[in-house]
Structure formats: structure tokens, C-alpha cells
Length: 176
Image 1 (cartoon, rainbow, N blue to C red):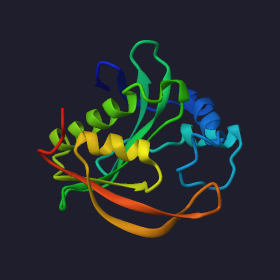
Image 2: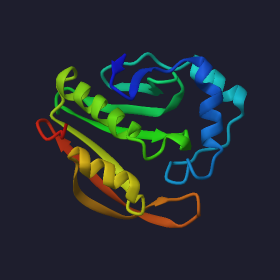
Image 3: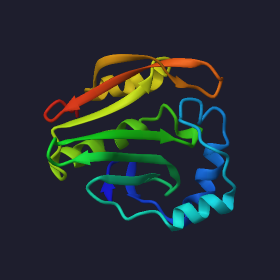
């Protein structure tokens, strides 16, 4: 468990399936997420129960509010490669009442610090939709730099194609 002032990052539990189900069916939450085929709550519960154990290659954690213990979202470092010292970060907050309160920012900082200090990564990268200015602002504030733009590579929930930015953070660049 990784602990901050606002959030703790913890392993996901099968009981988290109800929250995940609600979030993936919320258009505003899922606006900039890759969508897949619709899943029932039972399918999502089964997926949560059969979730692989966190490993160096893939660390998936729930974002939980310290104040009330409520699950707010999910964050992960995936495709970690010890030879290259790099991984990709994904994050989303599903509880809209907690948006713009610093919860996501702290969660990203905690996991990046973990990635650099414990996993001994040198670079953490992420992809973000160009129109998702809220997320881009958070990433820049933390220290991520926009490395490049991939044109019309993301098909949004609106059915339109959007550009995405590749952003990265090097060891030593994390803004506290």
C-alpha cells in the first residue's frame, strides 16, 4: 500500500467490481478511455476475482480516499521492462465528486515515486488525448513533458478520431 495525505494506493479487490462497473458505464468518466465490448457486472466481478497478481511488468492499484476509504479510481504502471528501465502509466478517477481536488495528482506522484525508487525505472511514459486538457495540466504540473503528437490515433466515445500526446517523465524530474 502506498500512502499519501489524500489517497492510498492499494491492490484491487473483487468487491471493487461494482464501482468499476458504474464508472465504465458513465459517459463522462469514460470519455477519454479506450472502450471495449460491453461487460455485465457478473463478467466484471469474474475479471476482478481472476486478476493477475501485481508483478514488475504490471502493477494495477486502486486509488482510495484516505478520509473516507472510498475507491476513487484506478492507476497502473504496465509494460515495465527492467532492461530499458521504462513503463507506461494509465490513470483515471471514476468518482466525479473527487475531480479537481488533488486526488489524481497525488496518486500519479505516489506511483511515479514508487516506479523510480522501488522499481528502479528511469522513464515513465503515458498517452493522453489532446483535448483532455484537465489531464494534460496535471501531468505537466507533475513534471511530464510532451514528447510528440500522434495524429488521429484515438477513436473517442463520440466516434471521432483524436490526436494523442506522448508524454514522459524521467527519473529526477518529478515535481514534489
